[in-house]
Image (tube, rainbow, N blue to C red):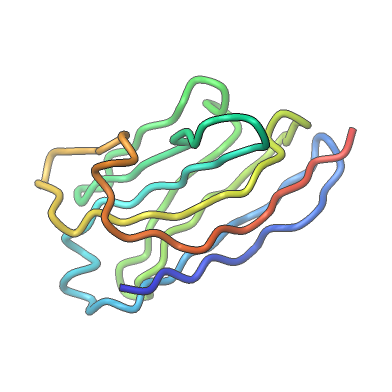
Length: 127
């Protein structure tokens, strides 16, 4: 499985970015996968930012609630992360991940649940 992330870059505090991650798997497999965005900044552990289950249910870590939105387009095999009101603390490398074995009602938030990872895209928020 290949996950190709794009959309990172540099933005001023308060600005917005949209990340996209496209999968190489079949549409059938993509539709049966849970998807997530993680991030990692220097000196910190990788943390889940947002996740979306097969049914479209979502999870957000507390620090991004109300500012970030995760969505999926199964026809395009793509997961998105819309990031608004960005803060300097959001600066990190963002990774997309997929869990093709997810059950319908689950929204995995642990990194270990995801077997496929993109290479990461850097988001830099300047104050």
